[in-house]
Image (cartoon, rainbow, N blue to C red; front, top):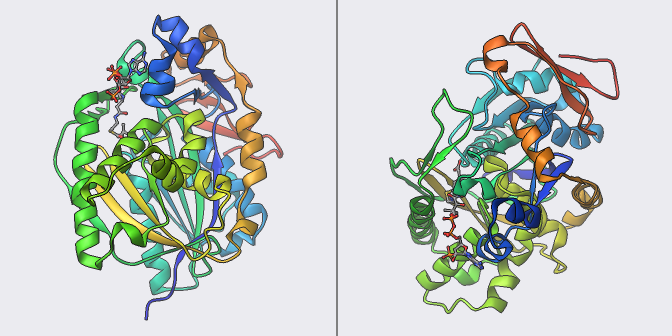
Length: 397
Ligand code: HMG
């Protein structure tokens, strides 16, 4: 019998600034319904120059650590595709900023948006082998496309921190996934670019192919049917993608996809992402937080199906059981305050943030004025070293 392992805490953080899709549509000369209806997005979080994946991650992890003995953390598994260094792990910066114990392992993982799921599954298996492990799984990303490209409307940023342990107060991750890999060029970012390249329409088709194959693998290997699930969460590059995905899944299962059914089984998972945008590796788990925190139904002991997709590509369909009393362990108030408290940027301010990094790559020196109200911020880059600041203390890493 395997030790139950899963998610004990789930904390979300995003930048304290957003661009409204009405302002975006106006500036780009598009019909706003293309974004509201066509993509299912109403806002996108915009990263200020003094935040990056390290500060997003540290700000997401801080509330979890505030409630526990941090010396019990045995590993930090950090998933990202917005890496800030080719060698030093972003997790090492986070480890320093959060004052984690030195008896701890840290690693950065990457496979596009799938990295967060790879980290979660790795952590769950580590806990199954050694129930003493208390692992911080972090997924943090900044979705950045070229200005004026079709992808620009699907930007965003965010991080999730998950405490994975043998006391899964929120969700038990069940053993046995369905998965699918294919070598494709649907979305990629060569090392010399700071914006992603994408074959947009093709990427949505590959997403659905991966979903079909991962579902068939899962349902055949575990004899699961659609009716075994109460809710579904999908990787969310934009919320309409998940609606297309779930309609496809229902069709595969021989069911008619009507709006009421779609809304009931996955509608609540979309609420946060609709106003955050794509956060790549974090996106599925921002959707999971949205489901657990906004669905009025009591999901205790119910099974959730989760589909993770990472371009390139890997798809994994896995399942989780909701723990009793899960609501007592959520950060609902904190998340809703964070999302509602963000500042609306004008289109000009959005462009100024977008261009803020200038020629830092070449000079390696940049002093960053204070923009964020997040606890952790990037203060400067000096001699190619990033200097982070804890605004509630004096520590810089
Ligand atoms: P586009 O060409 O600007 O948009 O690109 P479109 O013309 O296809 O319109 C989008 C939808 O809006 C269409 O609906 C239109 O009909 C509708 P659909 O046919 O798809 O159902 N529309 C309207 N609806 C109402 N009123 C209107 C109106 N006008 C149009 N007036 C695209 C869209 C998603 C391709 C683009 O934004 C893009 O390239 N995004 C980035 C790629 C992406 O997000 N791909 C998703 C799958 S891959 C993935 O999820 C992985 C990823 O997260 C990365 C990773 O793994 O690391 C991206």
